[in-house]
Length: 296
Length: 287
Image (cartoon, rainbow over all chains, first blue to last red; front, side):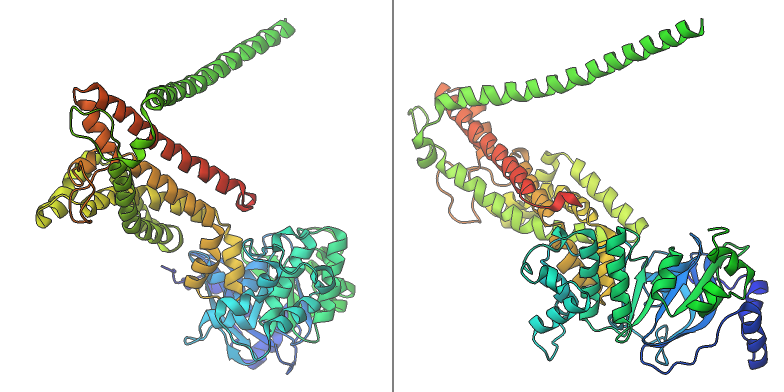
């Protein structure tokens, strides 16, 4: 049923097609996309990735590299395609009816959009945390964390208790729940539920953790706890976090990608650089206007 | 001037509101009153006729006082069990298909067919079961009766199960998808358990509905004044027994029919009460 996206708007793909090395260089210079060399595990190389809903192009071709074992923030005004973009990174985008993507996303050199790749297996390597905490209501705290392995029938070499404890410790939730692991996950507070969801995602030991505005439903204290957690996790897992909160991006991330809607209402990568550069010395006027709060 | 116009509008609005509220309240009270009249009448008439023997004894020969409907009570349970075994798996998977897998156009067509099926008069379903099962088998039977009731249950259960599955938020399916869980496992291990109370409710309400059906059983289970001799022979059921007794000329059998009605109504009310208890005991409604 999935519709194939049409080849459309040739004229604006010109800017991003990357026809040759020399053109690539000028393009990068013009559109302020930093070149990242990373050989750390969990490096994601994105080449001409575009996303569609039916015939509508939600994300115009994007090319950049997300370094492994670092935190990369994706910022931009509402409707600029940030969420759609990161949902392409673990092939969740295509689960929406009529949605499709094209281009390449390479995880450690392997194309996750390749013809023989099973999206289900990709999602075990690239986990995701959503805006609203969504623990499984029929499961206990313990079972929620174990669910990724249990539901997939994965036999890990280690005992399940150990895996659950480690994931909960990584998610900075262990001390709060260690005495009530059998209670329902939905009985926790919102911030705890979100950390439970992070623990659940970590238990399958992903290479990459995608976070789609993970703090937007949380109060400031719970938000700080999640941000601390993100910093602690970075040495072990690549994190890509979508946020509409610029302070949050500046606090937690190493790299920042700024997206904006273009004239065709498609999301476009305007600037990509170290977080420090984006917030102190942006190269693009639009980035500067956004981070200084002139719009958005 | 402007003030009085506003005043007039205000009074008119209050009046319309009062009339509408009155109409709604009258309808609600009228409906409850009818229900209580039916229940009350059945309880009074049935209560006078019912005794211990009603549950333990077979019908006596015509003209002899007393006896019971033990065979019909057991027969109804057997026929309902057969109907449940046939209808619940089919309805369950049809509900899953409609809610989880079908593309909108095809699901729409299936839904239309199911709704049409639910609207087919039960006597027609009885005749259908007669032609399909009773004639080839050469005998009325519990199996034929169970099949006819299953035909009545499937559309009710499938649609109700679909609705229950659809109340499971998409975010839970997404969460499981993001963990790399294959879609059939998401349905069986996440979606179905979350919708569990709703699905059980749907099955019980479908059973309650089928348990009171009479017309399809006349053509299929027929009835029996004695204990049934296995599943492939005619079997007594409460609704058919009530119908037979009530349409006869004997006062004693009329009393028995009232007692049977009381048992049938009590079973239905019992099932619905159980369903409500089940709902209260879960956190299902939070979602």
